[in-house]
Length: 79
Image: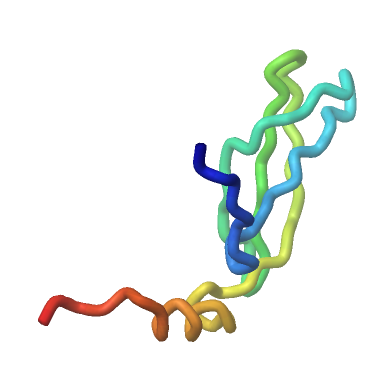
């Protein structure tokens, strides 16, 4: 059986907040650019239909340190 693997640190993990009304885990429904370096995350509650919006910082993947490691990895064009 394959062993679980840890996600690379360059993949953002979005925390699922508890619904402010019923405390059930909310589902992420969209991520929009709110400004330079800031995302607007929208969550919905499947139990009470509550909506929560929050701002979260992000790192541009094309400027991240992980990109250099990925480009130097085993992925190469065909010869």
